Length: 459
Image 1: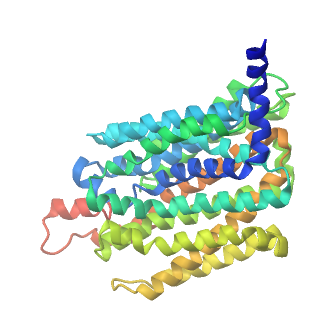
Image 2 (image 1 turned 60 degrees about the horizontal axis):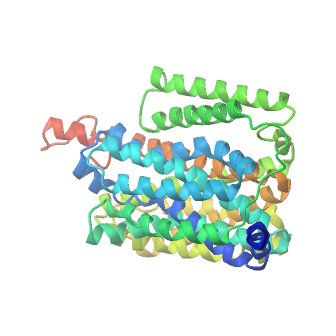
Image 3 (image 1 turned 180 degrees about the vertical axis):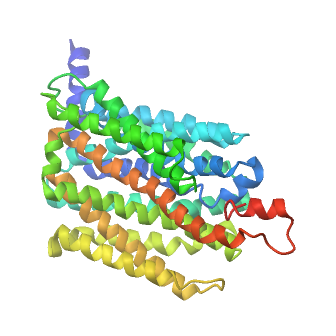
């Protein structure tokens, strides 16, 4: 009798403890998010080393970099809404386990194909982790003022993770081989599993109606096709190519079918009525644009610093560090700025700072200009993080609590979609500016080598 009572009381104690220790819960969630965000960019500085070791083709190299955000973006709605049904903590812990296994596979990959497959599995694990962190945060911080501070810290970690990835990658490449950038995930996940199981509260949605499996698969397939088509365009593939047009058309058709299906269902997978609220829909668009700029510009900057200025991977990571500190400062100041200016002015000011930073960085040439680079990265980090903070806070506050998993999944889909499109779009712009200079060959360089160099800056 006593044992039964103790067992029954355990979930209640965990739920009560979650309220008392909500800041500890925030730390656990931020560590989880940090690993997922770091993996989106940690490979950027390792691209030259991976190219030299595995000898991937131009398309394979793009897949190695881009398959992680592609798969992650595709599955966020599926796992975000699944967490609303079966428990967000349960999905999060499963994501930890899968992330650790996939990290080991990526670290030991001996071919480009194995590395692509491992990065895809990392994307599945990331899709299980990301929406769960935001929806659990929404639950443990019901007060909007406290939640604003928590979202500021959370969004700062998201931006810092993307920014610190190149630094961590550069440090590891200085001392170890490129696979070490994945090995660091394993001990952290081994710690996160028992700690998360002990500290994190379990939560679900209202559970009304069956989970729409078909709708979840349609959303995953549609997002995969749409981002794949954009990715192929970013890789320099012809716009009229069947392998480019077909994913775009199929992706658009599946997404249109998904929207139509959700409107007709009594208990939809995602309540599309949320998009009728201007604050929610605008916030989603702002997250896409902010991540497009952040991840795309970081990839270009990492290649520029290494391949043009000739810096080492560690030096490259250190040069990107001011962006990290600026993002942290913006996230920590976000709650105060929100109370004073509101989310609309924050997002507007953030985009203006970002645009000014990008214009400033276009003045960089073949010579190393530390002051210009420092100023540009500080403005870029502060501007983008200010935008992300305002957008996330507005989006999450507009969503009903029982649909926080679905809303978080939409926000994180926007995050990963922006990252994937940023790599493809800005990579395409960079290739369009770079490749024509090598079209006629380079004097003194053999034709095969000149042709290979024309494929990408890395080659």
